[in-house]
Amino acid sequence: MQIGFKLAAEAFDPNTLVRQAVRAETAGFDFVECSDHFHPWLDEQGHSPFVWTVLGAIAARTDRIGLATGVTCPIIRYHPAVIAQAAATTALLSGDRFTLGIGSGERLNEHVTGAEFPPVRVRQRMLREALEIIRLLWRGGYRSYDGRYLSVSDARIFDLPATPPPIAVAAGGSSAAGIAAELGDGLFATAPDADLVQAYQDAGGQGPRYAELSVAFADTDRAGAEAALRTNRWAVGGWKVMSELPNPANFAAATTTVRVEDMLENFVCGNDPKRYVEAVREYTDAGYDRVVLMNAGPDPDAFLEFYSSELAPLLREAA
Image 1 (tube, one colour):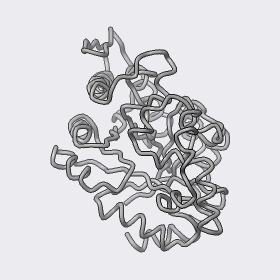
Image 2: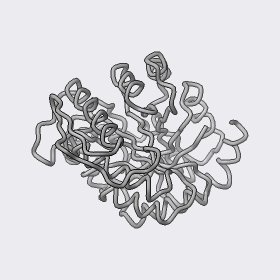
Image 3: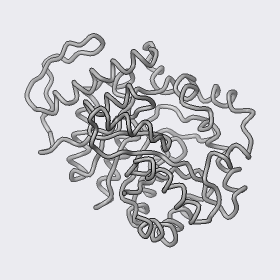
């Protein structure tokens, strides 16, 4: 089992994200995962720097900790050839510590280019083509590809790592889990869904299984829940809402009825390390071996100290 720390790029400026990654390495996390957004979910979060620049800075400032995107959409805002180049460069700069997490995207980020945001069934077809393009370019040499949705013309990535970075594919159902098994090296999820792991493995997937766990560290449960309500109430709406709304203002309007009680129900709040261990165990029991802690509490530095001094030893013991 590995434990990761989520770098919430929607909530912090780039310099703070780099500093948090350095502290996460010192605290003993196995990897950091950084979101790749153009917009934050809510205006209260207030940030959204370019993830690839942030990752390069983290690679230069750290020595051991793994890096991952969580996740990048390589089909609309980005062309997959650009992501293939970006991921290869990040792998080189980090000394092969990078994992490329990819998914089919959210309207929040992808609509900004003015391109159509297609339904999920089409996005999954596009994602399949994007994965094929990335794999093709990582083979080296000049490559061309003619797909139904995406194409590449005589392109070559000159700086490639000796071993391509692993790709973890985000999935919310059996269809995407099948893509992860066929064209990815791992699975990426947002809930302790044992059926999703089973679908991935039934399709032949044998790689690591990543999942995100929402927490809100604070002196009291309510203080954690109140902090999460201010900046992370978007998270309780479910994936169909999260993938379709176009702007932070829409997420604000869609979450006016979310209560502190909802955050208490959906987040691990407060400072009891045993409850955090129990929540992680729920994920590992469901078949996930890479659990990412997404802290929405009011003091991220205090959470990193809590992890180092109290939580990490208990997790090691549990493992």
